[in-house]
Image 1 (cartoon, helix red, strand yellow):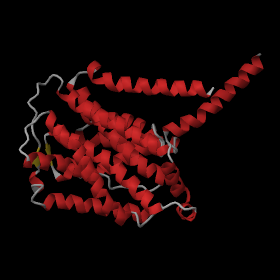
Image 2 (cartoon, helix red, strand yellow):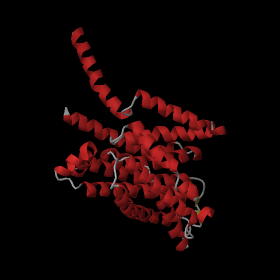
Image 3 (cartoon, helix red, strand yellow):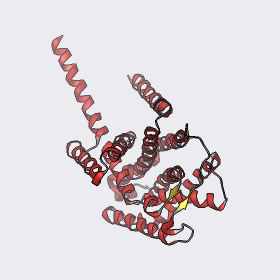
Image 4 (tube, helix red, strand yellow):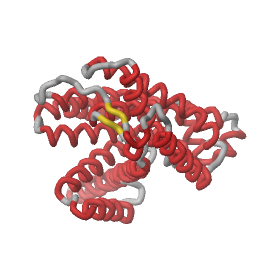
Length: 330
C-alpha cells in the first residue's frame, strides 16, 4: 500500500514538472505566458513565505522587503557594471537572493524577538522603512526609478526565457520547503508553532531556528524579485516594495493550506491567475479587487483550513463511505 502511495506521489511530481516545462510551449500567446510567469513568481514567493510562517506560526508581513531588495540588487549592479541585456543579467539573480538573505538577518534579529501581533506590526514597520529608503536614497534614484538592461531578443520566445528561469527557482524552492518539512529542523519549527516556550524547554534553540528559517525564506523571494525587475525593464519604489505583495502571498498560503507543501502552490496558481484575468476584464474602477476579495472571503468561510487540508480530510471519509457501501451491497 505504501509503495502504491509513493508511486502515485512520484507520478504526480513528474506530471507537475512536465506541465511546468511544456506550458509556455503549448500556450505561447504573450499574454498567457506573461500570466504564467507571474503565477510562477508568486508560487515561489508563497512557498518561501510558507516555509517560514506556515511552519513556525510567525505570520510575517514584510517579505516585500526581500522581493524589492532582490529587484534593486539586479538593477543597481547591472547599472554599475554597464551590463547589456541578455542571459548574462540572469547571473545576478543568485546574488539578489544572497543580498535578500543577508538583509533578513538583521531584520530577523530585531523582529523575531517579539511574537504574535507585535511581530506582525514590526515586520510592517520595517517594510515601510525600506520603502522610504528606496524613495530617498541616491543609489535607487528615488521616485524616478531604475531601468534594467533591455534584452535584444525577438518577440518569439521572449517571455519563455524569463518563465524558465523562474520555473528553475520554483523547483529549487519547493525542494527546499520539502527538505525543511521532512527534517529535524522542520520538526523544531513545528514545535515552535505549537508551543515555543515548551520547545525551548526541550532544548530547541528557538532564536537560531527561527532566524535560519526566516533568512532561508528570503533568498528565493529576492531571486524572483530580480527576475520580476528584469522582465518589467524598470522598477519604482512603490512597486518593488508593495504592501499588497505581503498580503497576497499570505492569502495564497492561507487559501491553499498554511503549513502544507502544495497549499501555497495551489493558492498562487488559482489566485494569481484569477487576479490577472480579473485585471484584464474587470480593471475599470477596481472591480477586479472586489471579485478577488469576495472569492477569498467565500473560501475562508467555507474552507477555513484551506483547500488542501480540507480535501485531505474529506478523502478518508469518502473512501470509508464507499467501502461501507460496497460491503453492504455485497
